[in-house]
Image (cartoon, rainbow, N blue to C red; front, side):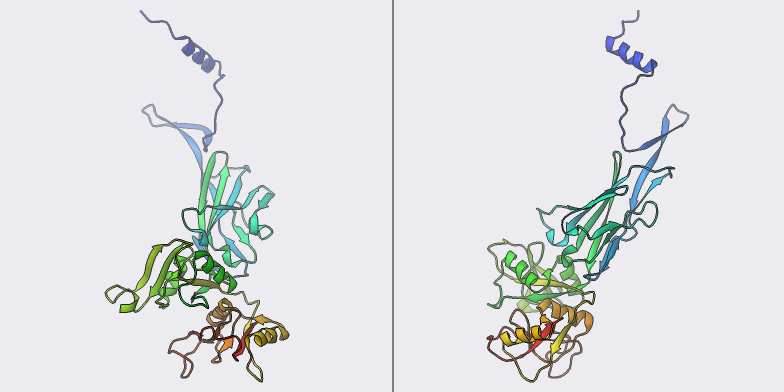
Length: 364
């Protein structure tokens, strides 16, 4: 004899038969009305899948230029008609690596409505060159715009994303305090690089510089809070001869208490300014050098600007001159006798007393 049906089961069967089923929730797929079976009682519902892609996982550009970070979305199979698709671009700064790093909003858009945030306000827009094109256009790139950008496409509960790395072409250079070696804590190193029109270098930037031949036997802060230094020629005083060439690392250091030098990164300029050697009838002390650049319509050049001009504009001058930090340097693109070492580079004569007489490098 059959047992009586449970009352809740009776209610459920009544709703099912009367076509008054429970509310339907979107799980992120867009279902079609057509259903296929496999002959064994299994039924599959055809569905549309959202795909988000970028043809370029990384993009490189010059400071001050305009750049497009590619991002495209599509449905598989294709669908007809518009959908209320929303795009969100966010950013993880290259100099924000570490446990406390987090993404910040750059731009959100739906249809013709959009909003940008922070330092990106007024500098970003969507490319929209074709259906599904949600590429991000950034105008007037800043030196600290580098990092990982995430393009997130949202359609209902469906959410897919892709990341694009933005790198600036630039040059890494070691920098130390006028008080001597190993005087910067982390914040001091950050500030010192910024004062020289640069930023603390990332690990990737220092690694690329080492790969291009940078050899320096003094540890410096990097943007991730580690202290490292690049060695191309192993030697006893720089980690020992038994270690292979590469980056020597002290690992994470205490950002307030530990002291090192800094590795700074100066981005390649777009060409809007020029660093030049100011010719004059006489040598100048530091105060006179600052005034001479101003009189000539410019400013006394910063260390990062001199390195960028040497690396990307071929600045070559065998004359020592004042820079804005009170140091004396000169750029050599083609090594030759009586102009320092046998390799190209920016020669550093240190921080002499400010009353001494030298020439000057200006920026205009």
